[in-house]
Image (cartoon, rainbow, N blue to C red):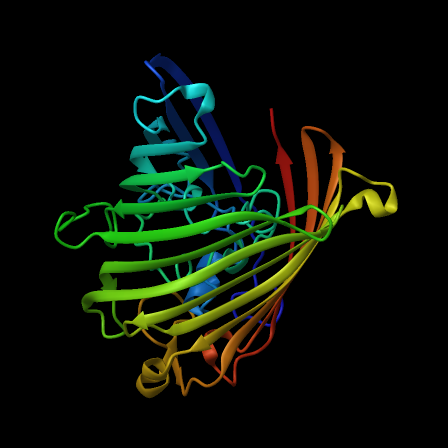
Length: 370
């Protein structure tokens, strides 16, 4: 990084192993079990940026270290383990003619596998690295999902999927999740995270696919600016639309409806360009910009920063305006299993601090898959 006090670079790695096991059908009901193991070392640049008070707390969303693990340990965790049943509708009907499905999923999961998805900005291992472009900033960087320190949580999702007019489809989803700061999930039944989403896939621009999602949430144990816990709520939109064979535009917007949080509105926009335009069909270029507005409550309370990470504020400031982030990456495919992605990020007015230095971050991501 450049323009920061804690300017040291850091190497990190992360390994993800997933397994999906289809189970024998029960009548017309298909069902399966999914498991996801994760391990890694290194925090990337996330910890120094958090100390400086940036809203975009994770410029390197790939970085992972198991909660509580010594930096020298590489501990594997079971991140996800869930069961899913797909029930054709109507009940008792003729399955080959069914054009509706009820999906029921429960277990430990990544909430973003079911909500706030996006075709152009959803996978930090291949697309954008900054957490504000991987998911809605209010949910992820803003902590509204309330996951444990490893990024997962127990929950239940019911989803109705209608594909009678396929390829144009629509889906309604409702989720109930354990939430809190950490993995104790106290008050799971009395104060959970509730999330609802409506989504549709439509064809525009001569038959090119677009996905549009509208969602809302109620966080039963949200963290307020003064450190207390209170009920919070908000809503958001996630959209992606192909406008040419190799161009996909995306956008997300989120807004708090209730809760005293550091930033209460977030807008991210960007595009992904396929390399077929320059005879590199396996490559891609991604560009995005984000705007995170400091809330009125945060401005009234004043901001502070912790330069050395000791939990004690080293400076204070009067927040104003919004934190602004931009990112550019190029994903270069060497082989089908090996990709390299140079990445550049530009962060201005970190944490809504008008006096903060502009930060520039250079990164290089390598991905091996098999």
